[in-house]
Image (cartoon, rainbow over all chains, first blue to last red):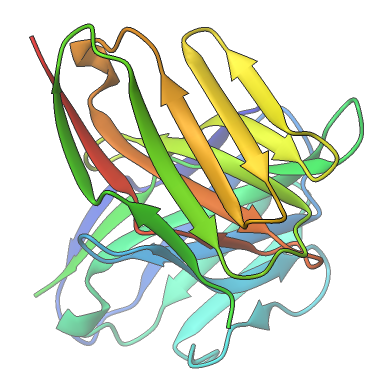
Length: 118
Length: 111
């Protein structure tokens, strides 16, 4: 299957700093990528839809100025957590939309980034 | 509100047992239904995808079914192995491109 990578896999930062997470589709082009957040024992919650060359679409309750998304190329989307606080500590997962050979679509997921804000 | 419910939340079985994981969803207007596996601290691995026109999909020891009328999907795992231990997530995709996930079933297969 298609491969999606995330970098870094784990990051620890001080409160008030900004952290950038990269999501790359390694062997296919993705015009649409998604950013999810997962708390322990909770569902993955969609934060925003990242569209190449245009502004991201944020889900209700997600602050766009807090979570900056840039999708500058067909293989890279970045999520920047600005002025991070301890409550931003979570597991962030990206996915990239891909089209199936027989029709239809699916999403390939990255391995996730564990963020810990001290 | 779109909701996806998975039962049970956790399941522990002895090796070799056949088992069924359940997923229900409130909106029957479904585009596709996917089952994923997530190992601790890791991302998601897609196991099976059932499109709305399909009733089931099989891959090795895994079989997933979809009943849109009742809003249910099941994941059947045959002859379970310790390596099957993980959290299994189901997700529905409606008319939009968004996936809505359940909370998952944490499976433990004991040797």
